[in-house]
Image (tube, rainbow, N blue to C red; front, top):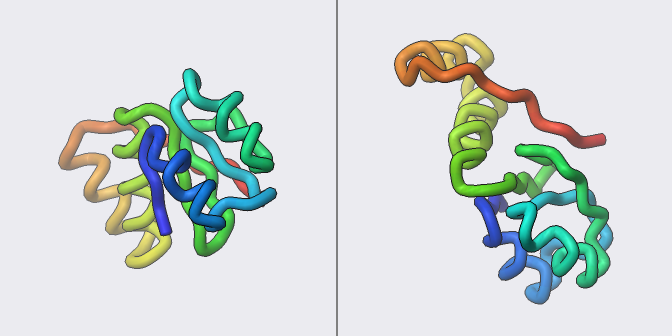
Length: 93
């Protein structure tokens, strides 16, 4: 499961996030923390079967990270080169 921006605020009340590490848009971090989540101030947080990212532009980092996880580091690097984008590695345990 993955969420971009305040999508984590939909996953939290559905019971998907719980006390797990996650992130969301900086303006909603306190609200996410209020649901019991362990909120990290990172662009992407990977907790295995839950990957969350901050504001909408960090969705690029999340997408590139998923390409790396599901395909390969080489495929993710190719995507970043094509987009002329400098990737950010996710935080997580």
